Length: 218
Image 1 (cartoon, rainbow, N blue to C red):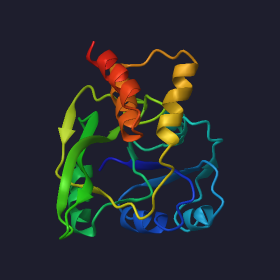
Image 2 (image 1 turned 45 degrees about the vertical axis):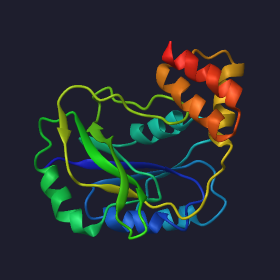
Image 3 (image 1 turned 180 degrees about the vertical axis):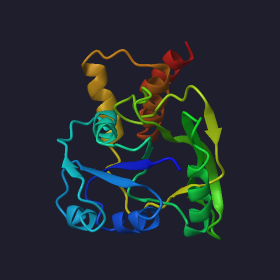
Image 4 (image 1 turned 45 degrees about the horizontal axis):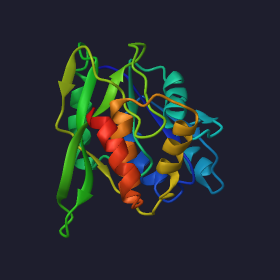
């Protein structure tokens, strides 16, 4: 059976962290928690599940923090989750069976459920690169809306991770990061232009959003 390190970044997640880790503690082989500046009881809750708790100064760069967490993992595979993500216990057996099949895989894609209907049923689901081989050159890219580029042998599983947010984050954070990047003269990738345009539209900056989307299309 392959070993998996769960590598997470957290900040002020005392309301959700225990819920997440309760579902994962018996499925993964180690838990890495990187705290980016909590002022609540997040670290105390984390200590109930792992002694591998690290601090990382937040610099408006999700990839930097996530890659720091990945660098601490010692398992054959690295897995990421957010504190408000949940793996339903119905899929625990499936997860353990999956670990038996990981020998040849480089990247494991899993469903990510991010919206639910009025009955609590999945309303929006898409695939994410959830688990990847350690020391395989897999790292997050992008200061925000960060992602790992899948390559090599890709394995698809039907084990869903559910994103069950219970509080609203900073609605201006992502736009602020993109605007800072622009001021710094960063050359945006196509993916970054797309998400920058979306943030501008969400903030009703339609003219600027149009310009960014046109740049994305070019």
